[in-house]
Image 1 (cartoon, rainbow over the protein chains, first blue to last red):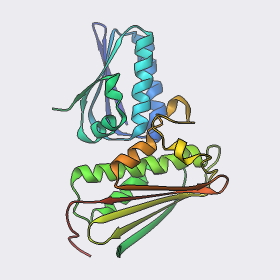
Image 2: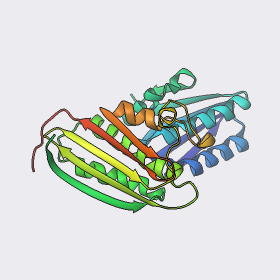
Image 3: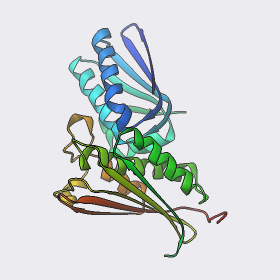
Image 4: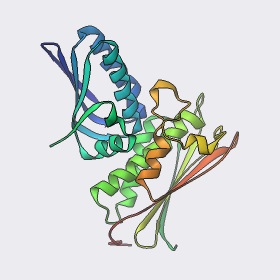
Length: 104
Length: 146
């Protein structure tokens, strides 16, 4: 998977491309946490626009980032979610605690 | 139900095979005229079942995983994922949403997703002997070729 980050004015945008499953999840969560530690953002935007596949491993990654952002006193936004990952997020009910927006 | 076609795979429970197995199942199931959403649901369900083998069946080792896919009648795909791992102590509890023994790396949503993305889910398990998960999904259209 590919990860790109941009940090402007307290907002860290993390864009994830490829397939997010258990094989990729641990390394991805670690890399995003390192970015959060390095930048200490007020807002974190997780852009899933280029994600080709996601299973429930992705839910655990999002919850991990959510908890970390909470501890930092910041907010997490999950944006640009394609339809297959969106179905997984919908089935989990995670949208009750994390801000999630589908890809237009 | 009448079996129209089948295929079988065997591979070690290495996490890199999660992507391979869902792609292989999807490629085989493509002979049914499925929508993109149905295909996405099938891949997700397979990914969850195979991940369970890597994470839970063989937590400290690598063991064999068998996947059998059958096309039944003209509109149903059945996927069976089988391991000879440590088994599940309490299947009813394991199927509950958010229940996990996998720590913060896992969400506890695997069985919930398998259940909501397919039409039927059967879980047979014996502690110390392994687990067999069988899922069936009926798809909208008919077989286009044999």
